Structure formats: C-alpha cells, structure tokens
Length: 88
Image 1 (spheres, rainbow, N blue to C red):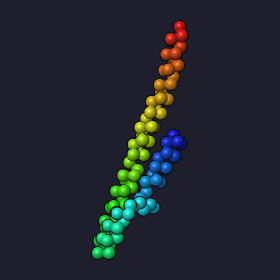
Image 2: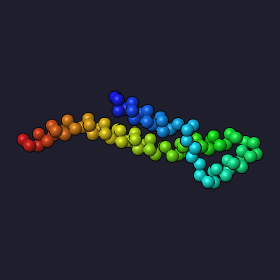
Image 3: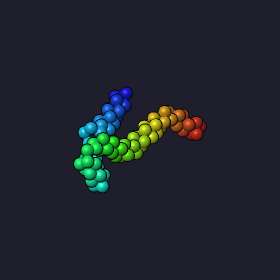
Image 4: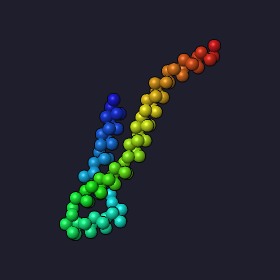
C-alpha cells in the first residue's frame, strides 16, 4: 500500500502544470504574438495541452505495468502448484 501511495504522489507531483512550462519554439512565438495583442488565455491552455500530451503515454505505461505486475504476483503461487503436479 505504501508503494501505491508513493507512486500516486509521484504521478501527481509530475503532472502539476503550474510548475512546468513546456513550449516548443513555434508555440512560443504564437503565444508571444497573442500576448502582445492582449490575449493571455491561449498561453495557459496551450501549456496544459502540451503537458497532457507529454505525460499521457507514461501514465498509460505505468497503469499497464502495475496491472501486469499485480497479475504476475497473483499467478505466482499457482505456477508453483502446477510445477509440483507436473513432477508427479
């Protein structure tokens, strides 16, 4: 349970978009252009979208890995029983 809490807190800390600013050069020039014309809402939405696209594959891989690990751990005792039956 402690590992799950640690993993969840790590994901939450990594996905906080307020701390990070991830923008490519083209996106940055578009944001600077819009801010100079008085529109500031585009920058926040664009930054959130970039962070979403960045973290989505890692979250999916983490969830798949967790279920794979959990399934392997559940099937481990069964594997021992099957090996004993095959030896007889």
